Each structure stands twice: as structure tokens, then as C-alpha cells.
Length: 117
View 1 (cartoon, rainbow, N blue to C red):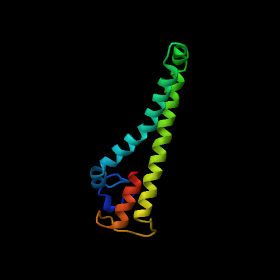
View 2: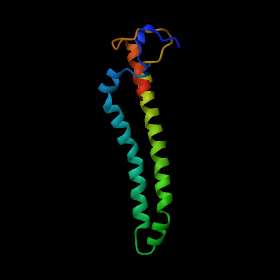
View 3: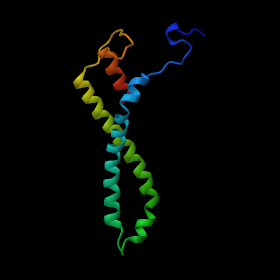
View 4: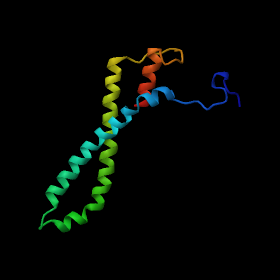
């Protein structure tokens, strides 16, 4: 199969590795912010169900709690990512066209940041 000479035998990468390494903290921020709704949910779960009268209900609902916690984590990560994409759109609006594949080109840089989020 034909492969462009610009790739030099490497597989195409959707995100420039220089940007991925430089903005690793963005991944970490999204993950940390996604755990905030999970921790609030767990706090209310323990507060309302961890007492002498409802301890049985606490253990009965524990598997459903774990499943619901996964869905809350995914949904909150999605919402945080949408928020970051909106901020990136305000900073630099996406444009159509052909751009140079250099990190110093603003359009290419913000395309990589949106792809990273």
C-alpha cells in the first residue's frame, strides 16, 4: 500500500508527540476534575446509608454504587472535556484549510490541542 514520503515509514499519529508530552498536565487536570462528582456521590452515599438502621441497605446497594460510579466518572469526564473544548474554541476558532505541520503554526497547534482534549 502507498505511504506518503513525509511519514518515512512511520504510522500516522493524530497528535504531535511534542504537544502530547508538553501538555500532559491537561490529561491530569481532566482526570482530577472528573473525580470530583464521584467523590461527592460517594460522600452522600456514605452519609445517608452508613448508620445502624440502613447498614444492610448500604451493602445491598454497593454493587449498584460501583456501577453508577463508573457512569458518573465517564459522564463527568465527558462534560469536563466539552468545557475545555469550548474554552479552546474561544481562544482560537477552528478553521478550514491546509496548514503546515509545524508546532509553531497556530492553527496546527490548536488543532492538536483540541485533538488532545
